[in-house]
Image 1 (cartoon, helix red, strand yellow):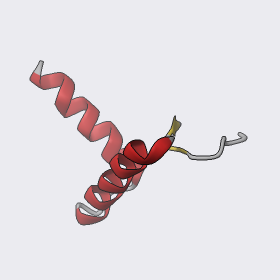
Image 2 (cartoon, rainbow, N blue to C red):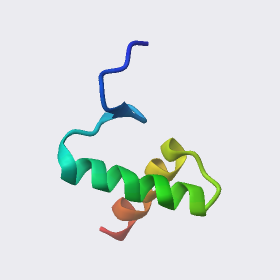
Image 3 (cartoon, rainbow, N blue to C red):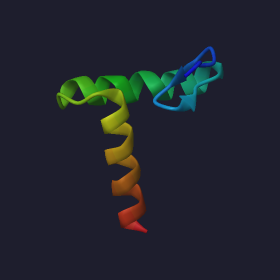
Length: 51
């Protein structure tokens, strides 16, 4: 699989606001002992369950 520049966890992060979001996601993942990909999935699932 070829990744695009800025692609992480299947998502492409562009611009300063998106990179800031990625850094927050990475920090969350590290704090909780998760990979960035698993942390992203977990947060998405939690957000969707709240709806």
